Image (cartoon, rainbow, N blue to C red):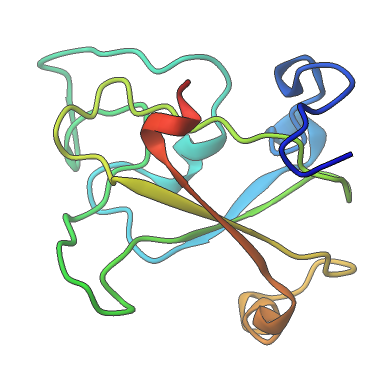
Length: 143
């Protein structure tokens, strides 16, 4: 089978959500969550737009929202670490930017690594050499 062949088996949305809290998933770290908490990354269900609803950080958002970064340096992007509930092969990732009009990134990068047990953030950083990155333009991911 070539790399351009369609995947076999069920569509990934029909598979269990291993990042969900009931499955043991968690958002361990994010470099920034100034406007909306990183834990929103694994909230189940579609995002809901509720205009004029304010909390302690300003407008309430269902997604993870950070300060805007526009640079080209290595630190000019946002990142988060999400732990899956169990070891698995990732078949798909949902990135919903429905309510982020004009302020979403042009592409995303998903990096994955198998690390045994429940390591600290510092221990995870030491495993960076094991990461496999896939960059996907958002317009392609939405197709």
